[in-house]
Image (cartoon, rainbow, N blue to C red; front, side):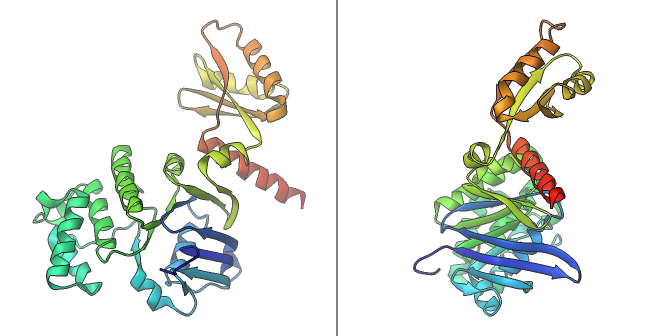
Length: 317
């Protein structure tokens, strides 16, 4: 790691595939020991960015420095200092858990007592000590995921890149996996993780919202909900919420109405929130049990609001 400065530093990073711009104008810093999240829909450019930072894909323009090394000229040095886990889990199903770790450990240059010690530590970290002799192909998805993470950190890299690591995993499995990520971060490992699960943003120290290859906002989860979020959210709980959507959407000051859990989220600008709340309550007067109250925005609300603001601004250009 560099003696000073960020673990990852990007300035104006761009990647084109012919006429298609996959990533454009990306500028950010990731501090040592930080859990930094890339949040965005599929196709937003998250994986392309990860591949550039890992030295697997050359940028079309801009600069990137990872662990003190340039992504254009020092790819081999970067690869020795990072761990990488993709959503496809690069494991061999016909090898046992221990054989997979042994194989990847030798690729990373580990051997002898050093390899044996790291394997034991990783098995304990992933909760797989009792399954070390099980064929990898027989493991449930959540255990495979933890094994893939263990393989990525065998050589104790200071920076770990996780590309959609929880894709296809059940909510409990995602929670256990994030506990492991926080354990690694507590040991000083820098984590750079991409995800399209909005609730996972809450687990990051900071995150960037990526949309159509561009970063539309960045900050802590709290900052995104307060500083960057210009809309207010009125939550509605009522009988048959879907049947209420059209009528509520026609109220003055309402920007959008969307199903949210078992209720509705009514979106309005901050300065009209009080009036919208009163109007919503009046519209629900025929249902005494219905409730409407202003609530803090969820990360999904923040992302949708910022995306729509980005699209409105782009349409005016």
